Image 1 (cartoon, rainbow, N blue to C red):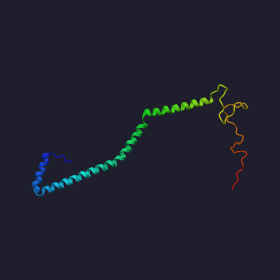
Image 2: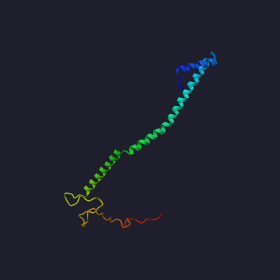
Image 3: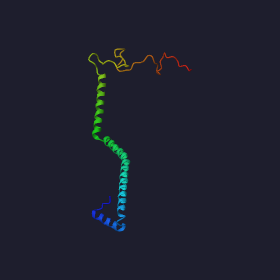
Image 4: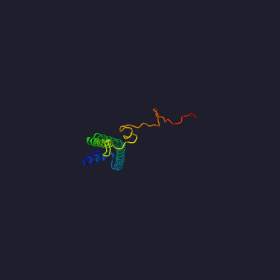
Length: 148
């Protein structure tokens, strides 16, 4: 703490012996060592409190820096883009399979809710008219709402 060398300590002790005298010197040394040890305890306590107080914000800063570094990682961005492209390609292939002609007839089985190509010359993929509803999408045979 004070960075004193051996010769400097001897000079200080000789001066203390001359100033305090031989009868007061042992008590003065004891008090000095006690004070010095208390200062060291307070210093280490202060350092540990300061470290613990700064540890939480530093950890948050490190986590934020890691998130930013990961978000800007070009390899990760490329992997995510390739995965999205594979999903799109798979969806395109699945969509193409539902509209491709089958070996039995000109078109694959109709999708539910669409017209049957064998009926009345309808074209595949056109929605069926729902006979239970009129143009404003209310059932024709639904009872009228009555206020209660």
